[in-house]
Amino acid sequence: MRPEVRVSDQLTEDAATLLAEAADRGGHVVLTGGSTPKAAYARAAELGADWSGVDIWFSDERCVGPEHEHSNFGMADAALLSKVEPRAVHRMEGELGPERGASEYAKKVAGSFDDVAMPEFDLILLGLGPDAHCASLFPGNPELGIRDRAVAGVEQPGMAPLVPRITLTIPALNAGKRVVFLVSGEDKADAVRRAFGGRQSPDAPASLVDPAGEYVLLCDPPAAAQLS
View 1: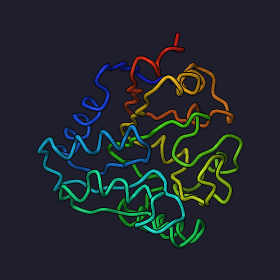
View 2 (view 1 turned 180 degrees about the horizontal axis):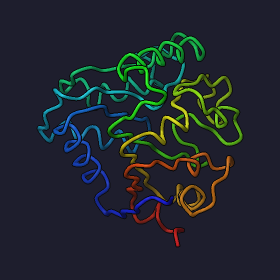
View 3 (view 1 turned 30 degrees about the vertical axis):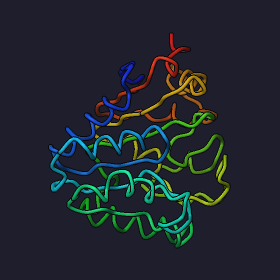
View 4 (view 1 turned 60 degrees about the vertical axis):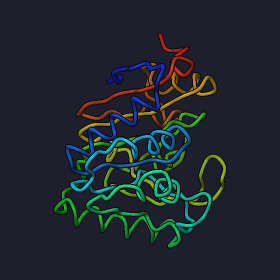
C-alpha cells in the first residue's frame, strides 16, 4: 500500500503539530534520528502538549553511548525529551553492542506489550536515507528478512557513521497503528520515488514498510519532486 502523501511548505511546523497532538492523546510513540525529525522535535517542545501519558521508544540507535554525538537518543533528548515530561523513555542501550542491545530492548518491548508477537506502537516516526533506508534497515542487509522478532542488531550498516546499530524490524514497523515518514530536501527526491513509487524491493528498504494502520508520507515540495 502506498502512503497518503502530504506535501507541506511548512514541514517542521506540521510535523511538530502532529507530534504534539500524539502527545496529548498519549500512548506509545517511536522517535527516529535525522535532521528533519530533529527540527520537528525542537518545535514540538515549544507547543505546550501534555506528554505525561506517553511512552517514548526509538526506531533505531547507533552502538554508542547516550552522550556520543552520533546517538539518536542524545539528539532527541537535547531537542525534546529534556524539555517535556513523558511517562517513560525507553532508550536503546547502544553501548551494549548490537546483539545484547537488541536483546535487552526486545525485553523492554515485550514487557510493555504483554509479550505479544509484535508491538502495536501508536505512532512511529521514520526518516528516509538517500539510499532509501529507514530506521537502521539498509539495502540488501539480512535484517530485512527478519519476520519473527521486533528488534535486531545490525553489524554492518550501509552508510556512515559505520558503527553497528540496533533497529526495529520491518514486522515491528508494519504493526504500528500509525506510521509517518518525515522527509525533506531535493537530495531525497530519488529515494522518495524509490521508496514510495509503488514497487517493493530490498534495494529500497522503506518500500517494504506496509502497515495495516494509517500510513503517511509528510514531505516538502523538493522531496516530492519525483513522485508521479
